[in-house]
Length: 614
Image (cartoon, rainbow, N blue to C red; front, side, top):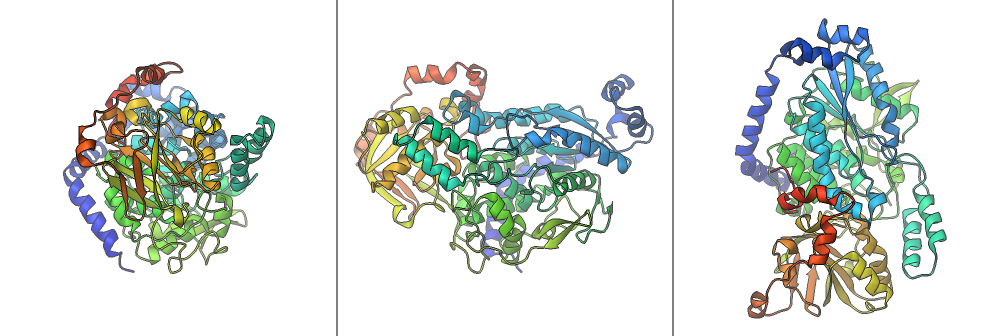
């Protein structure tokens, strides 16, 4: 199948735009790869420190026999249900490496915040910037510079982008990502959302709400809705950075352990054939900086659109691409969205959870359909010699041995559909632009009759102010709720998930409502139209700072516009509001926020990926 003309064109313009930076990146990568291996290059004292705690046999292998040494970067903690299973992964990896004459060390740990714990709390203002902290911590771990390959152990929202950004700064190393898998299905996402809406209206109390939340989030593994964490996993599959179809295999079982062991073999250049033929040397695993090229990035963008994935990746993957010397923007997402069909309905874009998605065909089905339709580049490198077509398979244990079978037809067309009969002919994300700036909207879960909202604006300085107004009964009408001072430079660009229940209640009562914000919402906006990531942000002098209560705002997801019905002369003459000093003080102090002041000052725009390291 020939690659679709639009996919080819978008890739070509990204390549042309990126040429100087990408060329410089690859020159640095080649210079690093050409050096003498670490333990031969370093002084004796350096080497002795590095291997002092190793078992004697491992120390002999890596120094005298010059055996490969894998650096493990682990995002384990048991605050995140998704990361709790990672506790014993390093021991499994070390054991498997020894079987193949290699060694492995935990090079370092990285922090991992649970956004579910910090939603609506001050900690959420550190969340976006934690991505860059994780990238820097990954660099600290790998800068010991004694490794012939790396394994990245992590799953959740900022953790995978941070690990990936960090790994790409060591792009000369073969690198494989190792996930943990989703928790078992509990209370359905739709039932959980209903209880949240009831709580917002005062129809149920804290006890009932806590019971519902605890029934939904109840075990080790990732949350089961298709938010940022699970979108991460889909994108890593599409980029060929996992062992094939590893993403949504549950933790704790023999298949999950077999896939983790296969990750260790893969980074060493060994690997099990699809048919289960035992591990053999199948060629060196390519350096991650060579794998992640323009085609690889476009494949990730296509997979995101085809599955209605998290809008957070319109920030994160811009930053990821930048780390590899590649420049992408929201126009590229918009162009791809026009030709990429929606193949999956997973909550919040449907009622299914990720376990049901996996059972219906999962990542292997989606990648197979996109490849067969010419919507993904097939001529790409992956961590496996078989290339991206290997990822159109699903893993199994045959007589306790790992193997893969080709992905077949959809096992539930209410969840995944073929490219020839999609849920929608276009992707789930849209770019909005106009006099209020540029923003994105996730339309895959918004009813068609809500794609255009025109109503008076009500301005809020925080999500707490909106919640208070809702509780006071002040929002019982058609309106566009505007929450500003929520961008990277203002307060770190938190996710505003606490807004979902009250806005959903208002929409359920028949009002035409929408949200406009320079903050983030991920997939949690659900069925309410939400123009998010608005750039330039209000705190940087963006046009949102000109908006006033009562101004009529038009959000048109069909036409791709976001505008205000105010005459140009009046609009241009208006002074810009400034962030209230009391709000600025709150955003700058307490619970560690003081330490992130430099990141707030240095953060680029959301469309640039909000990196703080430039």
